Length: 99
Image (cartoon, rainbow, N blue to C red):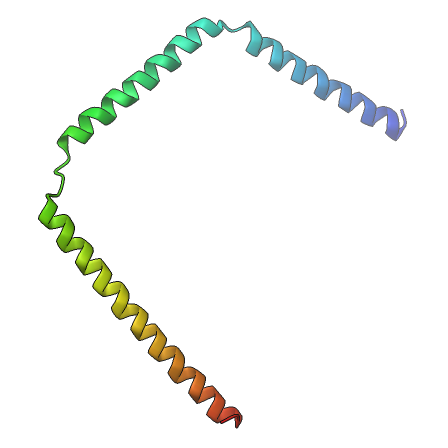
C-alpha cells in the first residue's frame, strides 16, 4: 500500500469515527437534555437571587466617601507619575547632553 492510500484510509477512518459520534449525539433525546438545561439555568438564577439578598449594600454616605477616596488617590498617583516622568526626562536629556 502506498503513502497516498494509507493517508486516504486514515482520512476515511476519521470521517467514519466523526459520523459515529454525530449519530450518537443526534440519537440522544434532546427534549430531556433541554429540560435539564432549563432547570439548571433556573436553579442558577435562584441561587444568584438568594446570594444577592445576603449582600450588605453600602449606604449613600459610604458610597460618597469611597468615591472621594478613589478620586483623591487617582489624582495623587497621577501627579506622582507625572513628576517622576518629568524628572527622568530631564535626567536623560542632561546625560545625553541635549539640555
